[in-house]
Image (cartoon, rainbow, N blue to C red):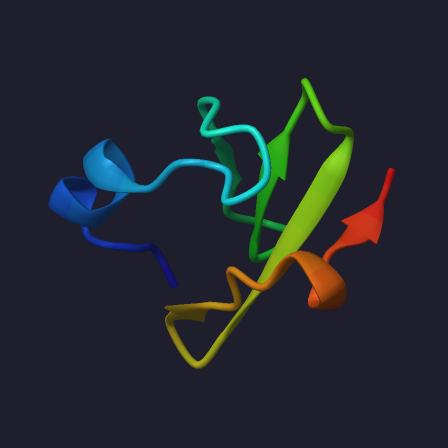
Length: 55
């Protein structure tokens, strides 16, 4: 399930305000600067720093 392209254009990492990479197979957004993975549940990105996972 993919996210809306308009949403992907405006989302940034809540920690560093950097660009996010969308990984559709993993259902996640990745911030390479912070090395954090934000999961997506039921088409809703969980953009809480405390909920992010390191990768």
